Amino acid sequence: MIRLDYFTEEDFDDLISWVNDTDPAFFMKWSGPTFTYPLTIEQLNNYSEGANKSGSDAFIFKVVVDETNEAAGHLALRKIDSYHSCARLGKVLISPDYRGKGFAKPAIRKALEFAFEYLDLNRLALGVFSFNTPAYQLYRETGFTEEGYFRDFRRVGDEYWDMYEMAMLKKDYVQKIENDDPA
Image (tube, rainbow, N blue to C red; front, side):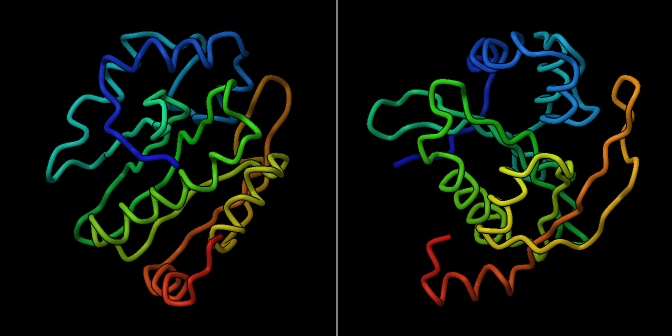
């Protein structure tokens, strides 16, 4: 159905077109403090510099529809710590044309496969804002466990947003695979 290909400079325009008709609050929800609104080529150059190479601390992907070769989304494994065998999943985004069509769950599954099978990580963590119920449910369904809750974690405009910290361990991933759990 989908595959993950490395995100390159050729993909910058797609990502910019998916997010620049939103607003600063959307940017915080999607990318935390990594990006500021509007997204620029310079920000993406900084973000992707040194990524997708052996020994890198970041692997950044576009989600590609196998049948059409169209880009349908974006995600990243960053802050890869080889010594502690952990990383963070983030910047998960399905393009507007593919939202609601079942692409998010397979994209997360592919990211888990890359993290635990290719990178041989022990732990993959992420943060999700408390009001982002669809994303929170997606992460639960794919095997992430809630580990913490941070009140007033990020200031956005005149309000503060709470955040869940979630993670999956390699043993949890292996158990899901052994049980043939499609979630």
